[in-house]
Image (cartoon, rainbow, N blue to C red):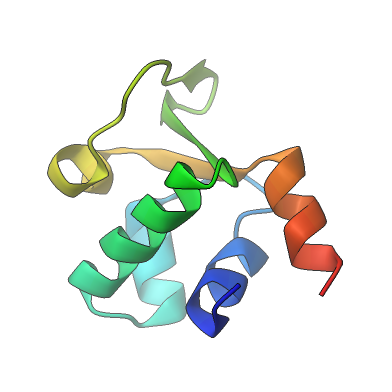
Length: 83
């Protein structure tokens, strides 16, 4: 796990939107989208359109990432805490 992935997962113990993550981490938008994409591909995060509306199927984070909310999965939390 990279430092970027670790720092991002640290913010995803609760559902968070893109704007919150960008402001809190102070990353460039491209870095945030790329890191979200990596975590999603590993199954370490879930995506939501609303706090109670999980996205199912393939999600295009590079296209729609700014409009979604994010939460670490159990798998992601385990990876985050077992380093």
